[in-house]
Length: 326
Image (tube, one colour):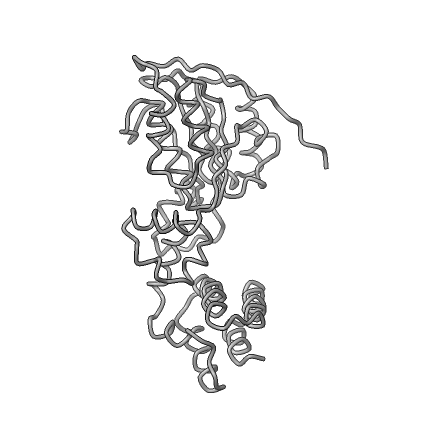
């Protein structure tokens, strides 16, 4: 494996249409909605205050900690407007599914009952649109901006095409958002200014969840533990919990104590829950049972059950083995 080449990132003053310079304090203040990300706020606020915008950024960190919010706030300041809907100088790209020859954004299927057979990707056709978009001058903003959500989902051909775009001067900036930056081509990552995003501590988690109107989530210790410092993930896990049969969850607060109950629960789980919800339930039970029992043996059994499910073993048999304690 070849060593990674370090590339100097040119950060140049941006032609700006604001009448007055923005102080760093004011620029940072615009990020008040972003909690627990002081490094990211300082870097982005400083760039706005000095009008020194990098040609490419990599917003890297776990999902649900504010990367997308930071991108929107940064662009709003750069464009000097909070109305980014259908802005002619902003292009937002996300992974797509291929459905009957048409590209469908992953967000369009997020709440759909349609279950795609393959994971979404950033495709070369989308990167060609990015390249074309950046080849033209900005219409109303100081410069154009492209945001690529879940950039680590780029297909190989798309990544190579993006690398060529990054190597050439353009009329704007590219923001890559990724929860798994290690999956990006090193040559792409090295051409971006890294903006790190971190997991939140307990008090900041509570602060964000309360601000978003989700204070009740903080009462479920297993969900909070499963979220591991990500308010967005806490909300997603809590919403997932609400889709689970309440009676079933209540019966699984502790492992069953007799074989009859174990066999019955295994059958109900196999019948009532699809594959994805069974995987989620195993993760949830790890935190729930650990908090109740503090027994590492159950953690190991739950991990083994998850591994067996992922290998497409019979789900009912997997749950029987787990709940019988064999």
